[in-house]
Image (cartoon, rainbow, N blue to C red; front, side):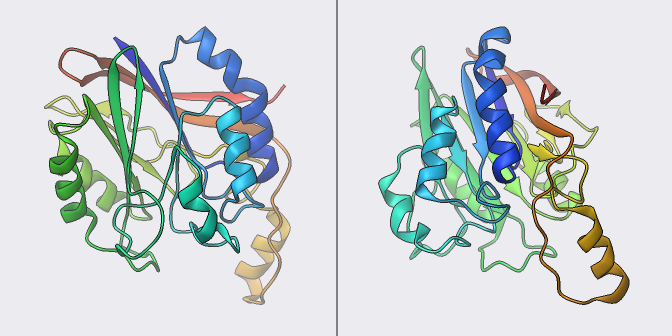
Length: 261
């Protein structure tokens, strides 16, 4: 049996700090083999940089995935291809730089990871996530022993539909982007682990990681404001999955939440 920890959206410095502080101990305590983390909000809440990507990997993360904020930081398009173990969403245009999947290995077991962006309520230029997932699964079938699919999407219906679409063909389908952990962790009938959203790694005394007052004020009057990353009630959130190595099926999935301090 192998264990995978998939960590939800890392938000700003608070998210990076708890990751560096707690992840090494968690890897040891839970005997975790693979750690994957979404880092698309790790640079001040929007995007990622080369130095931040390296710091996340140094914290004990094996693979970094990204989402709709992939290009928010200036110059990242020139850095992404130079840093190993970072991949962009697979359903972006083929002309975009960066890898569309990653394969990480431990104890002779190869785990493939890729992300698809949802299209419902998302303002991103992306191909169909369902057809892209089909293509990627077929491409990776002989290259990896297990496949984990992240769906970075707004609509829970789209996430659930992809889970059912891929049931039995991949080890896990895990949702990110909405920053709120959901209570639907389950093993689907054909052995695929599923969760609509694995949550956020960052400050929970917030609105999706941002300071509360300016967000509430914008809902009230619609005026533009700066949304700084909040700082209080910092937690690391993710899905902990047990994988049966022989069949690459998920045996168990549960929400793992750790608080700072």
